[in-house]
Image 1 (cartoon, rainbow, N blue to C red):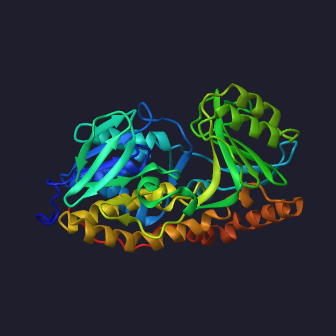
Image 2 (cartoon, helix red, strand yellow; image 1 turned 30 degrees about the vertical axis):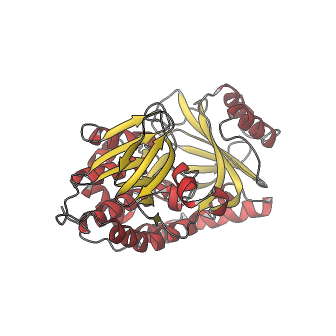
Image 3 (cartoon, rainbow, N blue to C red; image 1 turned 180 degrees about the vertical axis):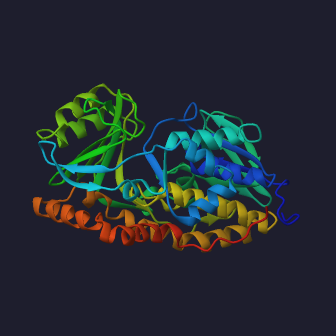
Length: 401
């Protein structure tokens, strides 16, 4: 299955997932002429979601190569600093914008839309369906879908998130790969009753944290972030009411603006809830199937997951182009080049839960003292370099134009 160096016109690739990693790979593969089909379980492109950021020269080079660097800047959040506050709302420490938001920040849904619109005329998107079974043959992969008719593809890439269906079908049960970090996180829209303008406030009590942020300057809306320390819970990921009950119980009696936030939780139909966890697989490809983004090296928060997914998509497509479509060579190079980079970013995310929800009052005070020091002018430049180190710890090859 090799072809002219740089040309992938002979390849038909199925990508599972249309959040960020999937459209990023579709965009990169389409640049090399590949036929791409993206299948997504949701009925349409999902908007909203948390804000995601990019930092350092590697992210910039990749996004520039994809042709979306300037458009991301045109739709960035312009988020300002975030403050850790006491129960009465008085500030304890201010966290600079660059610490929390990188060089440029954009809503996940807006980023997905940009990449979707860049590819919609040359990539086939199939919404409201998902892969039911995969059977590899000597010259391709036979794919059965939950709704659509069976089809054959040359390669399949699972870009379907932390709880990847593709990974389960080909690599085995999620329990083999998911590492739980003793915290859960939730996010949902709330009224902007504090009148925030591109600012965020965080309030912590031992083992739990509530944050309210306004990223886009809209006077009427904001977003809530809830983080709590916990043993691993058993719940249905599709049962929103059960997740609301868990959150209401865990945050009952908490101070600051928590009662207002819980009132908004009751009414919302747009809830994100998941464990703070990481995915660690032994290898990123098996036969003609590869894993990309959170499906292969995910971290719920704090691990620059979007940046790693974008870089991974760029490298995977580039290696396929360099190898002329030879998936054995390309997948091996992709695995070799991305695994160490992804693990370096994952190391940072292990601290996300304790940062937001330290287990004791003493740890809360210690966190505040440390970030007060790191946010000072004296150490600001050093801390910026420290946060960029993982994001830039990869040597990108020169891929075909």
